Length: 110
View 1 (cartoon, rainbow, N blue to C red):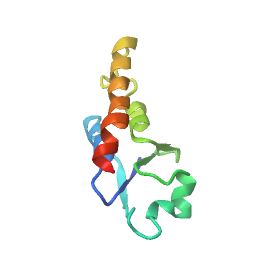
View 2 (cartoon, rainbow, N blue to C red):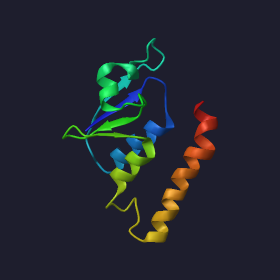
View 3 (cartoon, helix red, strand yellow):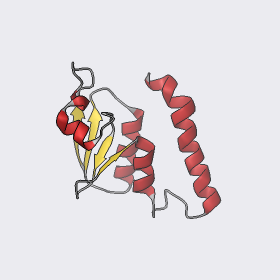
View 4 (tube, one colour):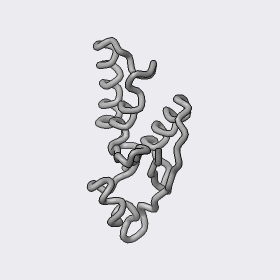
């Protein structure tokens, strides 16, 4: 796996790094300078992987790109003890992830 992050510390990136570490999943990383003009996330190669030009971006070993931090967390956590199999408990995990993205992250990262 290859994780594309940014040169500015990001809680969204950290959450992915933390889950990868807890799951003992090896990965490579590349930090992209989002303050460069133009941003390094706007290169042709990056936009080919993620048309929205955002980080984090996780590229699986087969080349499949995964975007959006909480969607990446869901993908990694599925079928592990980090994502409950019980429907209501899984809902509560997703509720927390959506709350963080909509109610906390905009005020912390912007």
